[in-house]
Image (cartoon, rainbow, N blue to C red; front, side, top):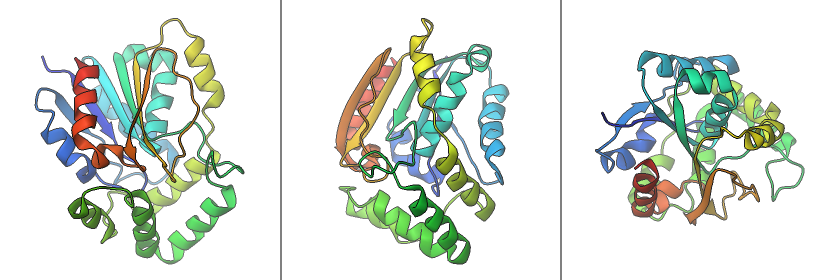
Length: 237
């Protein structure tokens, strides 16, 4: 039986973001999380848990950006980890805490709050501006244009607002430290792009896995897709 992979995308994105990567990983069973019906923070957790419930077996969670934080929260709950047989995880350009007064470690909360205000007034423009920031280092002009020229997203407006609230309020640092002290931790591959201005490269230590730098920016799976796929295949096998 193929290994099951759950792909969890970031704020303002859509399942389309994974298309090229998944096409190049045909030996695995892929399940895409969709946040289109999420209106509040708790809905994000429910979508992930419902996906886990629907298909029994062993899972690898793959989370990018906000999706990486949600994936981490899922495995921090040992009961869920064991119940749903989550056996490994790939975290892409994510963080334990999105906001920080130190811009080298995160975004000042006032900036995220201002972004939330702008979102409610001009949602399409806010999403376009964010996507330009996310994909500015993408090395493929076709892909960069595809993801930055429109405001297409699987999130509704309530979900976008809830996502920003999540980023402003969530701090996984203590849960991460406790998880790393657990002798039953699971293998983790932490992939990050250099010079990531959305989730700055963290000095995070990995206890039961490894941390690898792939290319530039916040979307390393697009910047260096070939290397990302190679690393993913090696980790999953």
